[in-house]
Image: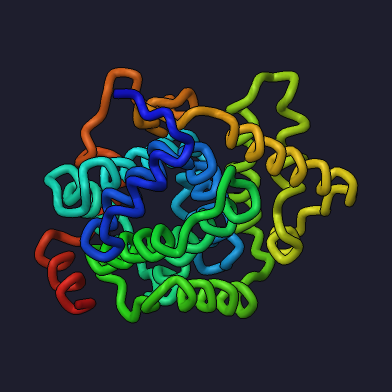
Length: 300
């Protein structure tokens, strides 16, 4: 039966346990209740991580963003969705986590940088929805999504995870205050990402979409990339447009069918299908299963 009450999915998340059923809650939020908002927020979450020079420089040196920006985007979307849709303990979910661990384990990435990236996934969607969503997330939903990413972090072998949403939020803000800085490699990765972003829209809109993206960036992110801030009236208009969209969505019926980011027009690299196990990169420094297992075990 098609849901008809606007609060249908919130009523569903309310009846689920935030600790033991966090996957179901995260799935409802991403595929039914806030699919567009969470997709946009996660894109910006990843984008802001480039402003940390150790992260931006590493991504620049791999040349994945310079030569294969679209594929890098598509692989990230598909891998994250495989975990969410299948579940963290499912075969497909574990295969996707294993792919992430193989790629991340191929490079010397600090645990603090890993915690920071995970923090952007926890915090950015909640802040985006608070400002632009058709309703705010409930405390129950925030607790569940935090539990979801804490479990994902443990499966990725990340140590010293923040205990709750407030701790993730503090970690993110303090880390950005200490580490955001200009680096030419970070700027190249950011430019390549914005160049791809504008291609998701009709050609006449593309010059404006690049300005729009910068208009909704916060000041310290703009400074880290040495981007010129758009005029104040443009920034106000961009934020207002997103806020108005949220008010319009409030009037729409709840989504009946799950929305999948991998099926959108933005994912273009695999028209014939894909295998999660073959996504991403396979550098010569990639760790084997035993090494990955030892790292994950050490983080528990």
